[in-house]
Length: 491
Ligand SMILES: Cc1cc2nc3c(=O)[nH]c(=O)nc-3n(C[C@H](O)[C@H](O)[C@H](O)COP(=O)(O)OP(=O)(O)OC[C@H]3O[C@@H](n4cnc5c(N)ncnc54)[C@H](O)[C@@H]3O)c2cc1C
Image (tube, rainbow, N blue to C red):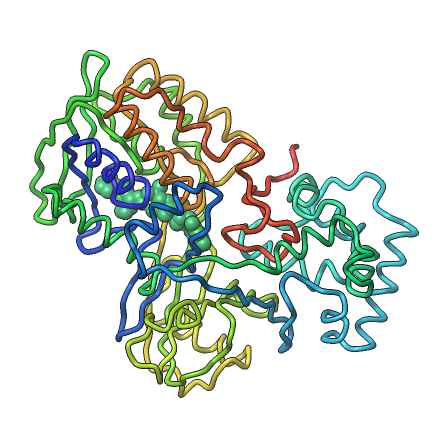
């Protein structure tokens, strides 16, 4: 169920073992799930830029196997845009103070001195913790706005633990020392920064979706084409096993698809609601309580060859809603058919319940254009056209209760329906990047096809697996990176 990275990786692995597989995907045209690539006026756009980078040699090898010379290395250039100025990301003291100018720098230093003299005694919130380390003024410029845009929660309500994990060991003195001293005299924290600075990743020539289009083509070649435009509307079970899924195609005809093992990548909340007969009410309540953050991309085609050199920029200005702007031709020149044009993907983080989610496309396109102009990125008349993409459930939310809810669902499924496997990001309500989503699918496929006994729930949980060099949203609050997700302060 689902032709995103997890479902397609599971299917690919099954066919390698000679096991027949049916992949059902509700989208009528496109595979790849959140890692798809959209095309508009000859420009290609990911749903938020997707870097290919994994600590798993097996996953890296799989990308190479499928894409060959179609996947290329990219050296990362990303900066922060704040009040019309670009700042290096990760933040460097010399560059930051140069950009802020002498008056603002003096204010930042005074605010830092104040924080050292009178720190918040027991910092509970992200805001208190970072202000203690860097001073309130720098916190407001470099930490507050983007974090609040991404998560939709005030930094005064976010738990300090998250900041502690991500920027551990650093404070303003450390950052300045690192900026001024030669490498031989710098300490451990600097090594972490350098690690982030040399960040490089791989990227398919025609966008993240090229990987998934290629896997789907390979599946079709061995007789298992993805069934596009078919939505799973019910999962039927009896006698402790799932027997079939009911799918509905675009013409609203329904049919039963039989199978012996079932792999779900759809959001847990939806899967549980689709079980027939219904799951016990305690399980339905737990699944219903899982929360998500949603995401809109406004994709604009500009009639200009060079707009900015970064792959993406973080937008810290509080006056605009956009959080990040990706320039896809800086990932790969093949992302635009006409080199005279540029495709920009503007990211708006929101909830499905926000007014913005329901805005007409024309209003969102207008907002995107106005914000590009307000940020000084282009002139209004340079924006030729655009299209909007809404991605529901882009981020599984880790609130204070989610682990308990997940445990209820997992434990019941494990006992009641052992031939129903959960994999992927929303499929496991786990903040997985592509590599982890893929690995969960591959391990389950091995359990099914080769009688292995892997536990997909262990992927992306051990400390080693928490990469330090990258975070998927790339939040600039992260000097050390990581994929951990912030939580509200426990009440
Ligand atoms: C903004 C953003 C940036 C990201 N950046 C990166 C990055 O830089 N690098 C990286 O590796 N990862 C990145 N990720 C993470 C990556 O997108 C996910 O890990 C990956 O797409 C998850 O794969 P999946 O198969 O589990 O789920 P999905 O991609 O969500 O795919 C699930 C599929 O199931 C289908 N489906 C759902 N319900 C049904 C149904 N009832 N019937 C049939 N089909 C159904 C959906 O249509 C979809 O195609 C990013 C994610 C976001 C949101």
